[in-house]
Image (tube, rainbow, N blue to C red; front, side, top):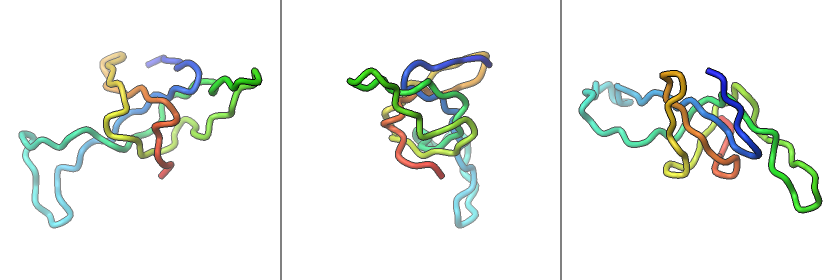
Length: 95
């Protein structure tokens, strides 16, 4: 998969939802697990353009595991893989 996001956008491969709860209960595939909130950074843009004409450095890099806002992402399918395109500002934490 080759993708180069622009500006302060980040491409994330979402983490797979857990199929077993902490108590050991196995969840079937029919259970709605909701949207993922964690994933691994696959590609990052150059950074956000500031008013003074400079580019702000990105705080995440390829390979970082991140937590992001649940409904802020755009889901895409590139090369048969499901990925998420999100603005760096919607990333909450590096895990």
